[in-house]
Length: 283
Ligand code: GUN
Image (cartoon, rainbow, N blue to C red; front, side, top):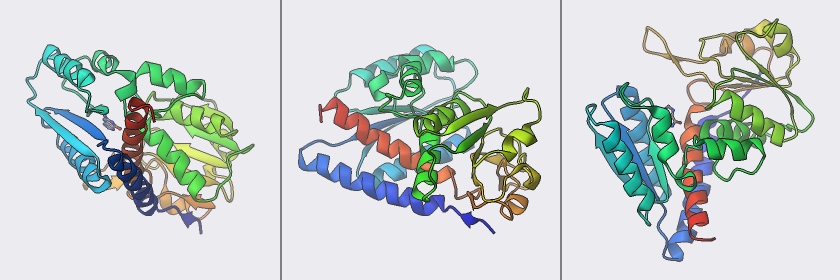
């Protein structure tokens, strides 16, 4: 039976570290500040945004909240971003995705100043990540690395297999594993014999968005399995990309869904707010 990696416990540890870093800044008269922008009334996004604001409060980070109607134009959103880019007290800007269809997501993300891009989605920050020089790393991928390292699993020289090649998880998590000296393979829908590739993994990261895609017979005995999937099932329950009941019998370490990677994304966002604030204050 695998050791279950507790993302809730680890995310609280990180938020407590963030809180003490925020206190150090506050002792210098600096108040870290995040602007959170929500456009429209997507219920899942409303929950995420509420949780992000709650985490700010917990960590001692000021949050500026912008809840805009679904009819907001692209122009209006871009001009709010321009205003926040110029706002000296605002260290980070987060635009909750997805945006309504009439707004070009790429155009919006490109407009955020890279030094305020606490999501790590700007192509400039994605580029820095790929050369191992990013300050602001995409939150979910950075959270996966923290879960692995804080569970005492060494990445150096290990076979790391990432299932999924999205710009927000698959690609950046591969880059971060490489930066930790892992030997990285990325699988996707066109990969031949995914099962054979996954079976070689000492560390397996599943980020495909298909419920229970990773089965017990795809996992090496003792492997560390990180499940990034958050699939909402018809019964309303959340389900990961890993078949937990099968895989936990073979893996050495496994993250549950919920309570694994999910809480880490917000913890790493809080951490990025501190990184951005320090940098902007030349600390
Ligand atoms: N929507 C789903 N996940 C995320 C995230 O990590 N950041 C933002 N901005 N939107 C999201």
